[in-house]
Length: 139
Image 1 (cartoon, rainbow, N blue to C red):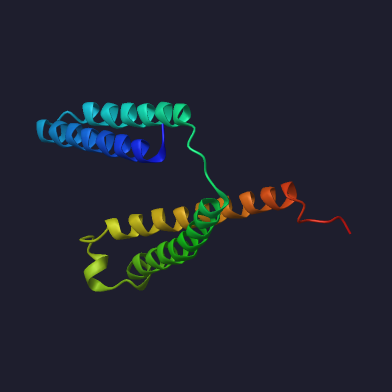
Image 2 (image 1 turned 90 degrees about the vertical axis):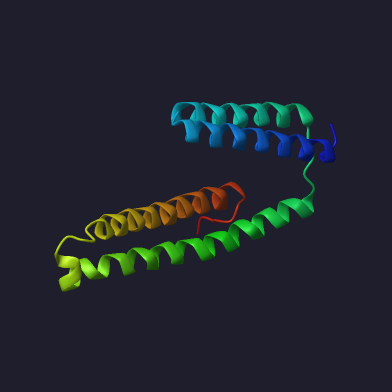
């Protein structure tokens, strides 16, 4: 299977899964939506393993750069979002102290933990890959 057929098959499966999810959410059957997404993912994993799509060095470099840029944008954005959402609960502003926006404190805490988790994963994988590819010398 060449890359063009694989992309076409992926588009068809994505449309099929989107149709299943939309119909099941309209009907209120969320279990069917989850199962539809999981089966779509499983089907695409099987097709990809059989397709033997080759990835060249250019595509690997593009993926690496995209991951770096995504991390550089997402980590500070979610961190700043957590900070902004946690400020009102600490400053005891009248609107926020009445409990009308109590969920903002919880959402800020979730964002803060996600930021810390993202930074920890980055640090661990960087350390592992640095040692794997010989970046750290023992001196």
